[in-house]
Image 1 (cartoon, helix red, strand yellow):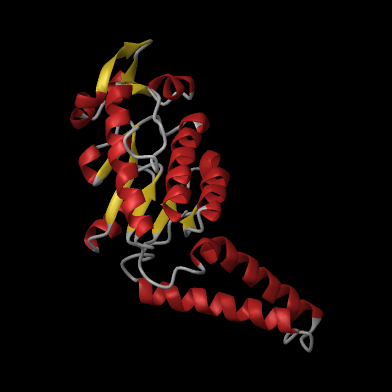
Image 2 (cartoon, rainbow, N blue to C red):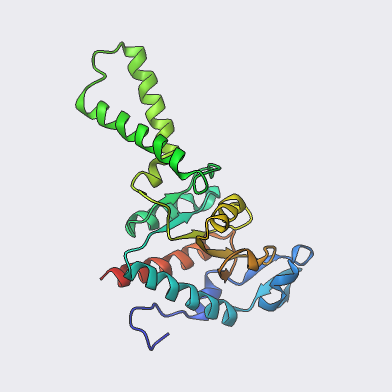
Length: 232
């Protein structure tokens, strides 16, 4: 990737240190992932990091081109162990995100979801202005609870005025509904694919360990570097 100064360097040694190469147990191999497997260690498939680097480079170039055109990438990572890092990365890149449960229709029924987001924002605005001060203490507590609940559901997409141009999914199996919705709407999918996942479900597969925080952090660090470089 040295020919493009806007692209981060992908080093297979760094990937190995982050555990990117550890797949699932051999019994869980998806047949279409065979091309990305280099061997077996302790009954676990090992991902070929040269191929990961190749596919990841392709994905990063696509991400860079989107950002250069001021397009939006929706970050999706609802696994408990990766929620915080997905949220932090998306926020630092000024991109929308979903880290709680994927709400069916977020993409395919975007108009309805947008109305709920607007309702949430209106409630927040009214609270800031003190419009609820005239309510009883119990009513204010209920409103606060509703705002908190809506924030968990919609906080990450509160500024997403239109459908995203692409989605970045950290676990294609866990967030299969998101992938299906994106596919139905013709939205490009960038996805981390472990050895138990069909890589053809996404447009830009990144063959990698989708369980280890270190692996996801490595991937997100490179995505963040790419986005910030493209915005510079």
